[in-house]
Length: 391
Ligand code: NZQ
Ligand code: ZN
Image (cartoon, rainbow, N blue to C red; front, top):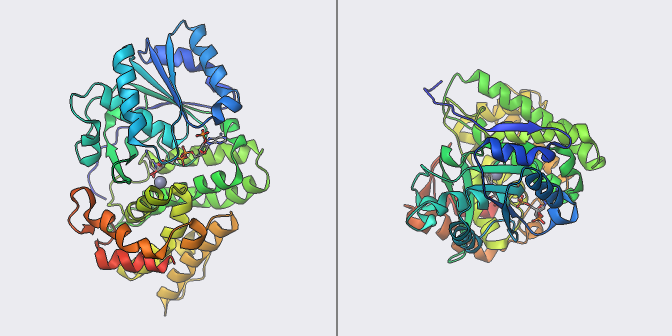
């Protein structure tokens, strides 16, 4: 295991009706004027936004509202939010929604008190300071409610990049699983896929002797395999939603990733798909992960075989461990398809003729040097082959 720091100071309020405590939590974490940031309207239709406003009013906290965050959140609304917060002297950003709303809120929080262009943070500059952010999560997926990360799409070029820093870890996150019961099945499945992807990106490591985090990851994967079909069959099942919601947080606050190298090639390869085609991030990952894993499997067949045996219940073939490894990847893809996720470019809405452009932006965009690195370093030729495997 490698040396590591782990700092994860988010306060979690988990369970039914916890959004009624929003006002007191904002006060507890120092807010006196709030920007409520939300998405395309699900929180208006569900009545959540009204409950959140009432909770702030109960604590006599003034607020302003900025809706309209789209999935795969765009830079344009971030610039608008930064201007608004400066003008209105906002000192607390409250995200009400999914990963896209939370990431847009984090970008506004960092950008409002920064002299330069907020995109600097998405071009490699670490975020050291930001306004405090609180979240009320409505979809278990991205894990942004417990992560120090934010992913934004730059409208000038339509590519997606991430920024990071402990300053944008939410001060508090309210996780009420009942709020996710209104999700369409496709979004529920996309969220489950993203959670599984966050676990795989950490499982694929070049660090040896990391049994504790291996076992944590395997346990969370088994939870998703158990609860995923249950929630698709019964969307109102609170207990399944609760297990998925907490697993989603655990999968991405890095408690499973400490002390080990991580991958993130599937995420990088997928981000170009959701930037170009505006598909759900999780749906893009359902197509990307099996292709990446098949392509890089030979780098460490035994790691994939271990996953296949421990998580998918495959029989170990000691003479041909590559067969066991491949069976595990097949099992993952069948599982994702059984949840309703796409299996190829066509089902995702992607086009084979765009592969050269996808590879160019992936490997050369925004100052990259022609490769992406993770479990394995991949060059433009490798990435071209991987995208072709998804067709
Ligand atoms: O916009 P509204 O109307 O709210 O609808 C949303 C949106 O259309 C809908 N939705 C959310 N909660 C709902 C609901 N509909 C009905 N009932 C509810 N309770 O679901 C749609 C998707 O929402 P979105 O926020 O985009 O989903 P998700 O949480 O999957 O976030 C995806 C974004 O997170 C980024 C992805 O790249 C993508 O841009 N990621 C962020 C990470 C991070 N910050 O740590 C890590 C991830 O790997 C990921 O890259
Ligand atoms: Zn993700």
